[in-house]
Amino acid sequence: MRVLGIDPGSQSTGFGIIDHDETRYKVRAFGTIKPSRRLPFHLKLNEIARGVEEIIVAHSPDEVAIESPFYAQNIKTAIALGQVRGAVLVAVASTGRPLAEYSALEIKKAVTGYGRAEKQQVNTMVKALLNVEEEVETDASDALAAAICHLNTRMFQKSVEESAAGGKR
Amino acid sequence: MRVLGIDPGSQSTGFGIIDHDETRYKVRAFGTIKPSRRLPFHLKLNEIARGVEEIIVAHSPDEVAIESPFYAQNIKTAIALGQVRGAVLVAVASTGRPLAEYSALEIKKAVTGYGRAEKQQVNTMVKALLNVEEEVETDASDALAAAICHLNTRMFQKSVEESAAGGKR
Image (cartoon, each protein chain N blue to C red):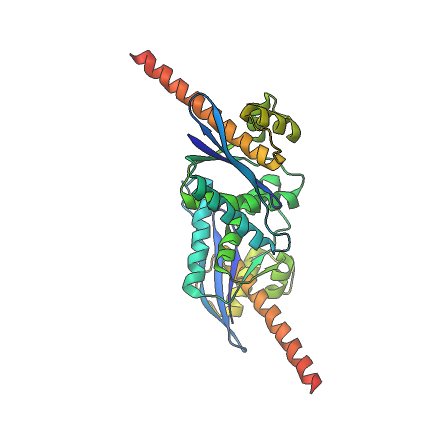
């Protein structure tokens, strides 16, 4: 199973693609989409949406995972974050890929065991879990963390289904 | 000149298209895009984005006008509004049409002379200004108001340019 995790941000939208073959994770790609700073805002959003579509076409993930926004510092940043998220969601929807959403707490807990971990702790744990030695931007590690959270959920669901099927025998 | 005004909303996104031929406004179309209630949120956003693209293709406006969001009741509604707005902006950007943004205050002032007018007052004034006798949903009249605001701005810019050109003679 291949999962694309996305961490939307107006200056930098992180992405990370992970394969899971029953026993282990394998990172396929990660990085950030950074729209040109001089563009008007709606054209930045379009660059982000096109970037997400291109990643989905290039890597063909089975499913997509993204953080649910429940928090922002103020109304202005909430609207800005919402707009980038809207652009990303439209891009995902246009490719027809199933989308799963997780709270920041669930995602942080999945990779660090602690729901209030800092971005840098998430970064360190994601790199350790995925055996990545090179530098990973924190927006990309947040995206990889969303993908890990979704894969864990899927693996758990699968093991529950299998034990239920086993119990019926 | 033909202008499309858009008023983004997750349950109902208003739109209105107005032609201006130097002397008067002529309404070409108006209405609302209402995504299916049962759809997951990201598919609703996609329906809104596709709807906006279809309207632009069908009516070929020269420019698009939209309200700038500066206000929301709370963080949750700000994020929700932002997401719909992001979907709309991506749709506009993908068609390459120029986009103009106005504050709610500017738009209300353009049609009622009063920046704090209620939606119903905007509705009444928009219908009177455009000679529309049929029922107009308030989301559609807000969209038409944004288009009027943009046309007024453009006409004013044009008259300033013309008088400047006249002064040089």
